[in-house]
Length: 171
Image (tube, rainbow, N blue to C red):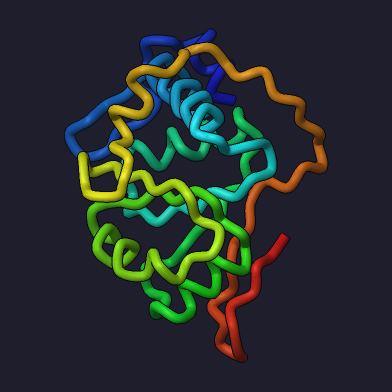
């Protein structure tokens, strides 16, 4: 979708987030950069990416990048208590987390309890133990990654609220 938008409407506005506007070309290029950056960090197709952000332009970039790298998106709720959040991250085998400022301290606090998470990225700039999102993508290729994908590859794992017990990942 975003590639077609970049071809057909390169300089048209695709996203408005607060005061920031991004064109189709910019979103396509930045999502390619992120996909390539994630792959260069060690993410592999079908690996799990946890995302814990408020609405922002990076959210859309991450959404398209995960398709381009064939990475499984796991949406994490900031409303979940720490025990539930740790369980979701471990249960879904998330190996990379992207978080915003609003979740930075919380993830830093529970980091020691996360079994598979190896890479921690923040969109808010530099923070101890976290990779800066903008620095990460700045040195990556703008080319679409060459990844094999199948129509039935898992794309996303949303979790239920867990009102009758532990939250459950839905595939």
